[in-house]
Length: 142
Image (cartoon, rainbow, N blue to C red; front, side, top):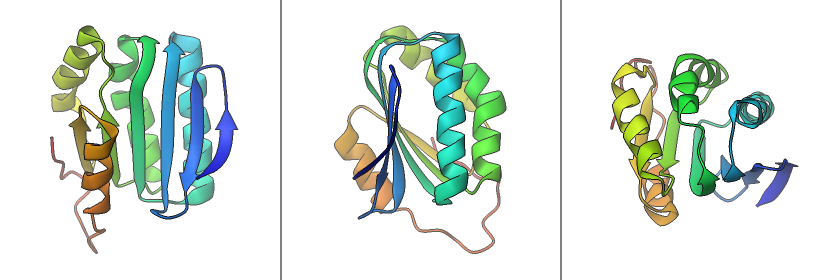
């Protein structure tokens, strides 16, 4: 994998083999670092024009719970506009973060997304996603 960016709470990599972005979040998140990281991901999504993102939250030590709702409203639509079609979300180990994510999923309008307990499951799911010509932008999988 090619390292594209590294911040105090996020590593952004491009997986050449699978042709997708890999976001590895870690440490203590707050509004400022989460929004900075999402802006960075959007920048690399626009540059790479990949259809898939593996969003790994396993190493987060303190989540910004409001970030999930913010991301659903603002960040994911921008990522979709930039070409993202498949999002594999690997849960944070924090129960509150997981609950907020699961509750927010009903409000998200995103092509295809799925949540997983580990990276291996997320990778397998992403590998099996094939872009469909003319797929409706409002379809989703949870």
